[in-house]
Length: 315
Image 1 (cartoon, rainbow, N blue to C red):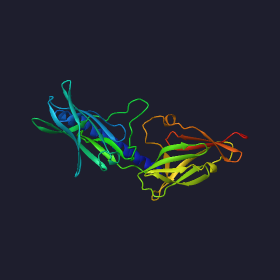
Image 2 (cartoon, rainbow, N blue to C red; image 1 turned 30 degrees about the vertical axis):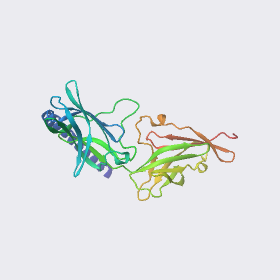
Image 3 (cartoon, one colour; image 1 turned 90 degrees about the vertical axis):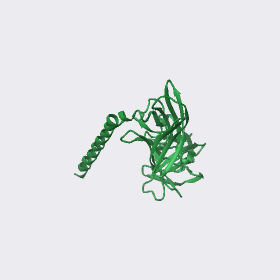
Image 4 (tube, helix red, strand yellow; image 1 turned 135 degrees about the horizontal axis):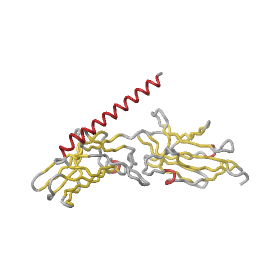
């Protein structure tokens, strides 16, 4: 009975959320945007392409005139940032282009988590104007082998575009979710090493656990460079019991985190992960006269997996 009640509650919440979003969109498109087009910069394009660089292209209102300088202003509570942008005339229109890098770890703006308002400040010989940036619609993904990144590949922080009910564009910055991100797989003659980053957690002495059905092997993680951890794959303890295949997943245990983190590769911009980042098999002899073939690969969900099978007898 409780499951049915919970299902009804989730359905009601989802419908309520859909109704609120539909109302906000109707108010924005039918009420606010028609009244603001003559006093706001209209964004023709706006997107985070690499997870932390905001690309903007906007058309400014009014007739073209010489611009002395222009800045993109970002504000949240008592914090402010100003970024120079390019304003130019094209076919009788005044346009603006900007590329803004977020995150001080990458050398970008040191923004904190939260919602950041954006304004465009333009100075000409006659006056200085501060224009809101209006976003009619959020860009939809295009067809192709790659897609826009949703999080920063360096920190795991999330940057996305949002809109107020009046149509003003804003940047929403969120902290990284706890995650173990695969950085590299080193396949040598008879050994495999995996490198990984930990996001959204404080790691002091993390442990990698290689798990298969009914089996588990722990390996310590060593910090080879700041923020990058490495583990040796315990090939000698991963020989299948029978003649079939055995699949090993990797869980990372971090002190203070209730659930282990599944090692995966999700901070990428490709659709077919396994095909683009395919890895070669390796044949090892973990025991005398006993060969084993190891295949590192990715599951459809992006999780890292090692598939082991016995090699040919007598080889």
